[in-house]
Image (cartoon, rainbow, N blue to C red; front, top):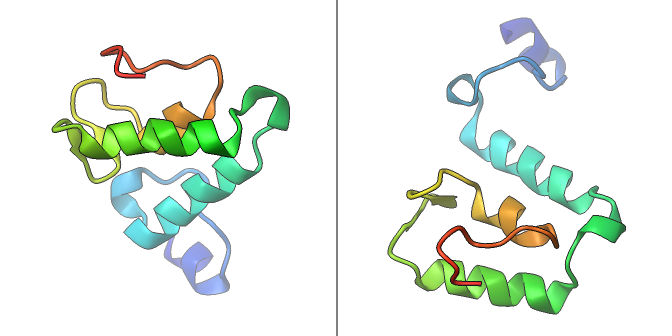
Length: 87
């Protein structure tokens, strides 16, 4: 793993606890950006969903403490819903 980090390559088989937190979230945002547009909600709805999550007491470090999802990932996919029916 150290060799991969030193060479600038991403560790694809690391656990999140072994990854740099900033790199992990960068990877998550890159993943979201590269999702097929056909499965994503439009930007306005995405931001509406996120604003609901930001007001929720269950949000902690980008995750829903109730269901364990990364809210940014759940919110961007059109077929997804909040498991607590907030959006």
